[in-house]
Length: 262
Image (cartoon, rainbow, N blue to C red; front, side):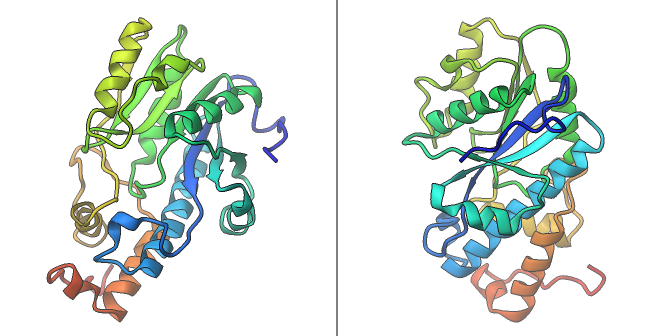
């Protein structure tokens, strides 16, 4: 069952943010990372990403009126999320045929829980700067209806923030294509909604992005040099372990091992 309204979560003027999440199951989690990862390694990455995104939400909540949730599926996966995530992260059942239905249902539920604005966030960006979440909350606190969009470098988006559940934002979208962000901007224009664009970030969903993640974790690089990336402790620990205890460097084409100081 979805969470009951929590007076602390739904405090006056608070924003609800929900990560669109799937349980970690070898063979069905992060399949675009297989290969170079094994099915088990990909599932472990999914778990680490979820934990780090949850930590980032809680860090943002210390700076802005924000409450965090996981919009998860399938329904029988609830025990996994209860065991994996901090107790401060609420759970929302969001298991529908299309991504658009999942997003709209999740946003609607956040408003039902008493929040005055709602954010949906992907689960594939463990280094996403916490500052972008705080920025989003600040923009959504401004008067007047509006949209916040975090474009991904593959043409999709990693974040969408709204002040009302506009169904049109999720209609006629070619999900899982490079046209998603632009089509969403087109829908916002139809609705005459002002749009605040965040810095572009990336999803870790293929070998190119995985190498980018490793560069951020172990080579002090940033996807966007003018933005400080989040330091994802769970992902950092997992990737260090895999690089040092398996043949993953070979599978990645000769990636250097982490320095001892990392």
